[in-house]
Image 1 (tube, rainbow, N blue to C red):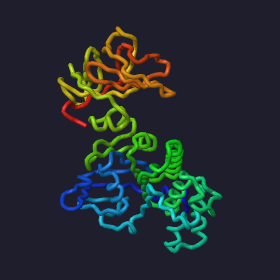
Image 2 (tube, rainbow, N blue to C red):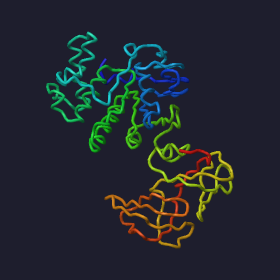
Image 3 (cartoon, rainbow, N blue to C red):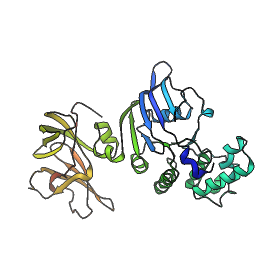
Image 4 (cartoon, rainbow, N blue to C red):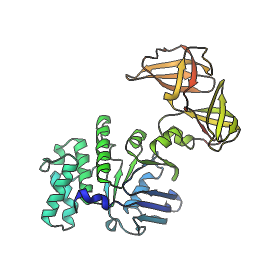
Length: 362
């Protein structure tokens, strides 16, 4: 089987009420249920200690679930060791052998599996071609850039033709520009080969850029599952709103609800939005920095504000705006022209504010 035929091996991954407890009372993953479809790239996202890496390691068989069931395809792998699971993992540290050539590193897993030499050669060359490193086979890892080393690690995992490919913080050792390039490479390879990929990161921008869906984790549980746009536009609570991108969070009031649409208000601004099963009364409001509109004083349906800080960021302006309800972070067009100390009107873009339960805290 060649790498091009890998799509037929891609398998779904399912967790059914999986819990992982360390020692007597440290719960790293708590009653987690999820499903990654075959050929899908799903990212586990969350702050340090939320359980995302433990979840990934349980898929790999590097950690054993305390309770619950883990399926890869239609096979129960809950109690199987890593060696008996058809998965490959790309680590944060690359884990390349420094004394081996690129070719030897990529072919290592095939060679210890006692595969015929000709097939090892064919798969290895094809793997290097897929990651754009044809002709680099004789080099040592020390002769490659960080991005090239990461692609070697990806090729080494790909040549094993796994049912599931796992990435554990694969870009954390790269600078910002290289991270963008390598994440595009990974997404391109995943899409072209139809791979099932589970990807762990704490970087929100990275998750939004590469994922079909994102699983946001917090305190060992799943906070929300959705597409990048669903999580960005409709976070389920304050934690998700603030963790996925930046959000301004403040109090408001739902004045009425009709057919699932709420009319809400805050300090003179009235707006409508999805009621999201909330009722009349106090609410929390989340709004992205780019969806707040600044204008000269006196504009209708706005609240007064004052520019506390104005920062030129090249492609846009960043403002801190003081208001009666909160200090707001606003991203605006570079030509907006406001300066520190200016009095402004603060309004909301259509579909900008999102209503959240009033009793949830970050």
